[in-house]
Length: 346
Image (cartoon, rainbow, N blue to C red; front, side, top):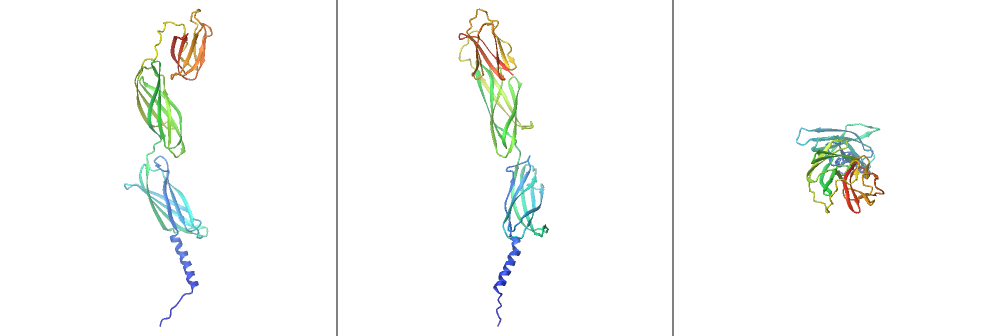
């Protein structure tokens, strides 16, 4: 008759502990998250892999990594091998590592992440590395768009039957913030066509930045018809990133009031209709018997009055300092129009 042999309980417990210590490094790691950065990835900036891992031993550290890219397939394959070193203390160790992938051409990619590890030996991390855990992701690298013109609109204010200023309202979108207008220039490429070049500089914040700005085209000196305005969007370095044109058509109606017939000579003179910083009006040619109830009004193209000067005596000069822009003037005597016109201050 066979005699049953039993191991002492203490021996069994000790054996179980040794077993757990031996198998724990084999089962003690996992990949908790893989994702590319930034999102979305662009073909004009470096891409990175954010690899989150978890170990059941303390002191987990990334010892080394390698990145290879195989472009021979329909979808390029990225292989990332990461090598970790682990301590001996049995505690949870979590980490997230940023691994550079380089600047990638636009398109779809498949990525496989291999996490290998070994234990510290004294103070050194010595291979061989084994026990790999593997994770896969796919992502798309987009063609970089530094900015785009979403929409263009036009607006204008008719002044006394003559169109002088057209406002071009641009709805713009940029991939980062802040998005600030640096400057813009206006050039008439033909009597009925104008090109507006606008330059924007972008900040580092990776959020969509929407911007609505208004650009003025003046002086038009035109009484109606078709105009073409082209907005040229430039980045901070002056490179063109988008263009869009809009057709502007207007029929200029008559003024809502009928002006009296203007005499051939009134004695009122605008010294220079294109002036630097000021406008000079000369009343010296008015007859000495002219009543003194003469009023000079300066207003903008939208009708806003910005200056009113009353003639204190005949044979006088009036000089007005004004900011750069387009202005209109009217000279009246007891409510009757003596003279009217427009001038540009630069």
